[in-house]
Image (cartoon, rainbow, N blue to C red; front, side, top):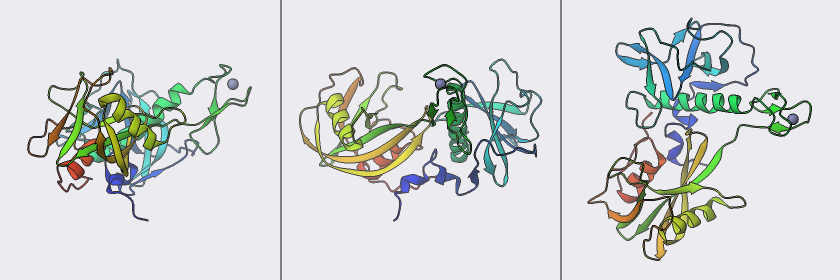
Length: 291
Ligand SMILES: [Zn+2]
């Protein structure tokens, strides 16, 4: 089958065009020089090369604690290791940090995607250190990122939290909402987390109803995007308006309203599936996922 073009969006592995080869975390590390995905607080640590931020490369920098990194795979055929750097560590020039988010213009799509993988796995490693049932230390499940507790037999694997994200159309109009914490004037698609026992389609219908009071029909899946803030998978849908008046009743949104392609509001990042869906299905702009 052919896949939706969203597979090429940043944060999805396909955007790395096969240059990343994942390896299980128990792969022996012979210490060869390689690349480093280092996270400091909410930032990605990079190396300034001709004023361009690139992945640090070579041997482990002296200011990174020895044995604190984990090999997550090969990048361009070289070992790729991920690790955290203490917030108090002062980075020597030309190392630098960049805020890790979809709006960071100095991070290209590849750095965003690799950073997302590292962030996800490092968070998982930290949060799964102890068994949630008996409190004993967890150890790695051989050959995977899973963990197991020898005393009680509990097994856990890195979680991903599914969300549905929906564009609702009514003729030439489309429905967008905004959260109070977003920059002034920015609107985006209606989205929310899956409830227990729900299909993604049911989640899409419920979220639109709860957040805007609008009923939808003719729901179509259009693609998905990994979203490492912290560990979500966004399932994108397009739907048609079926009834109801816009009514922002719950606490999720500050406002929701109908827009047209002639006068769109400030929109989300081009790196997001939200923007991809808006461009493709509301503004009718053909976009290429940048890689
Ligand atoms: Zn246990």
